[in-house]
Image (cartoon, rainbow over all chains, first blue to last red):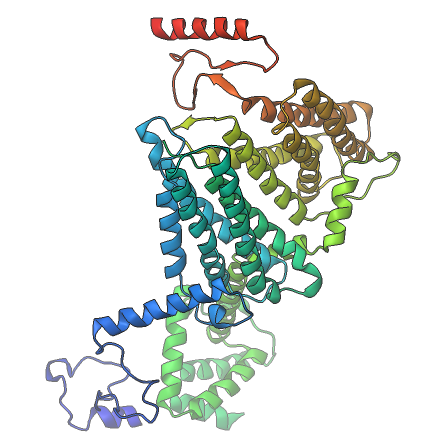
Length: 230
Length: 340
């Protein structure tokens, strides 16, 4: 048979192991080279050789493009197609840092605030994603997380504005300004994420998906509005 | 019959012995009845051996360039019909191994799949709205079992809404929680109530022989939280004690009556009905009371979640007590705190 002939052909690859019986003693030979020079250059371009600046700039541009999509929520699929979680992470950390140290009278209360915001945002996003999947949505898990995370951006801007307004001093006027700003940004966030997420649902169930998103951004807006620095 | 037999014998050494044995059997009895006691038990009886057998059989197939595959299939069919010592045992063990593997992967994909919850989320918005309104209307007919919708979307959303309202209440009452977080406490309280009391009531229902499933219990209790949400939303913003008591009795009472009526319709026997409904009514109303008073405006004192008994008890002062007694209470508390 072929195997017996192969082993008896005098190919002494492993002379010391010739008496060991191995089921397949077909010698391995060939070339381990990848054919270079493909016909579509930008598909097979090896990103391992490019300078680090190019890699970073490409990722930053992708993140920036998604921010622009959130600012002007049109029905484009770019946000959904190439999802990434860099933007949500940056926004979440920025928001949590800015919300830290508010309404506490001892130094050890600064810790839980950061973890609280972080956990709320990620846990809330996971729950909304699971809910929309269970209601029959066609969007994938990470795409939904990506959209919800990016749509926190208007609320981060609102937090920034609130902090600046509070620097000028507290009082009824500043509270009204903050209320208006936070309210507008909350509406913007909800509308932006609804524009992306509700399309993936059957048409008569959009309200069921929108409500948890509304609740989620409401809780974040509430945390921003009731923030009072020491 | 002889030709495949000879070919099989020439291909690999193992079936050859069995072929010989088969002929012996035929010569011995001449009947097609398989004597299972004489089966060769040592070949391929354990699943680990089966894996090795499988691998070796695959390799033998590849060596012989595919003819062995066809031949073994023939052998397999042939053997499946008549059976040989060892060969049949090996085939059976092989099939069992494959079936077991398939079942294990199916079980894993079944339980690790969120689709298991999908039927409980199959609702329309109008249905949810209808059920929310119905949860405040007690049913009149308790002679035959009332229908409970086994859905989880409405209750889950109500629990989250309650968490949000609780957070609002805690913030406006300036509750400060050390060694914990506001959000953690709110989520823990609401989910703990929903899941814990549901399980406890389900256990009681099992003891009292009530016709209710766990999902239905979760759904019933969840929709009962609608009354809590309304009450707390109003009374966290308008701080009047009398208003709270009116809401507690009316709104809380209505939703309790509805749950109680549904449970009564599904239970037989006076004692059982009494136990079940009394427990549910007590827990439901007390929870609303707790939610209101635990996050009432705290005038003096800090809620220490992990502190021992050394701290003085926190002072909860109602709004309608005059300022004088308020000051007296505060100074007393401060004095006690200083002495400890």
